[in-house]
Length: 443
Image (cartoon, rainbow, N blue to C red; front, side):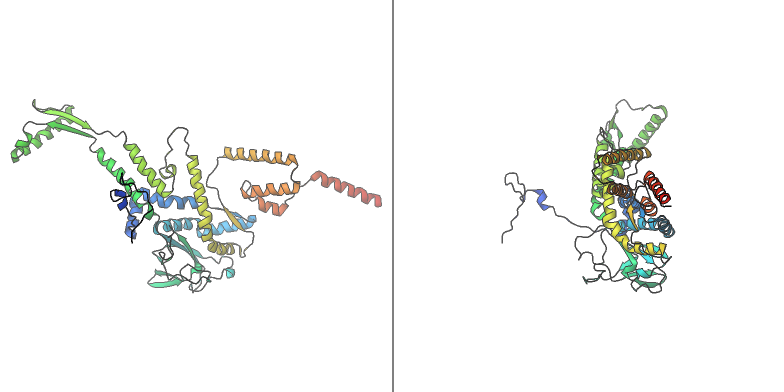
């Protein structure tokens, strides 16, 4: 059977034929093992930043809890006691580095192989949280029953420590995955790839380019001296020794007097390497590494962007939008299991309205915040003056806007306590006066 291809072929130029060298290109996957991953993370600053930056930015501003004031304070105190923010950040780094990590929810129960009964968690029921990489918490056989709530997760995890093996039920584990594998068959243990796997070539090439330029600095200036009969006389040991001594002495004299002394028949010249375009070459490799990591160069390299009228704000905002999406699509679902235990441990119950929003990654200055609030206030007044929306509905909408965007922290709890309808003191006073007059008339 003939082999056909729908790729572009040009018999005149050889494009797409056996004469085209690119037709021999195929994708290969040299998998990184743990020693290579450790060496890259510990020895290469680009690899370390690729692992650390997204994990750090996902967790650095953390969460804003929405509940009654007293409840918020208790939940935040419980998070601080357990070090939740720090441990989630470390778990995310380990998951990106090794392809998987886990938080062990410790409730102090004697048998961790039994399912965790969340509804039985009382005040202070969450005793501790421990962070493990995929190499410390070994995943067992995957659950293949589609009717199981743990479908796709390991049926159990195994921890080795203190000279014994401890099995743990998956309901007690919060899983974090690094780079997801496209096929479930490849993820035989439920974990993913290290994020360094797909960017390895780009990181290696950027490091090699920097090393090559560094080596060229040693050859930036080379003195060239023409010596009559040099090659003919090199055959004798005495000549080789004398020539080395001769030019060692010449270099010493040059260093002391800044004068190079040569024989009349000798010719001296100096060759210098031009580095004019090397910064652009190195920057191109670093840009490729940044693009492969999906991290803007302004964040990756901690440098201001170049070019006229370039501030880099759009790149950072796009990156923060990407991080925010990861918080909601990856981090939030993973933390549900922990949060159900955390809230009960902090409050003793689970209020239905207790929830959180991610704190903004882009931190506006005080001047910017004041300017935004002023513009909002003007827009609200202009809309209110139109009378298109009934006052109670408009007031509720404005209140919800301020709650959702975090303009006034704790506003929802204050509205619940003091009421969400604006008070009209004059109307209340007039109603009280009329009521008093009616009572006096009846008497």
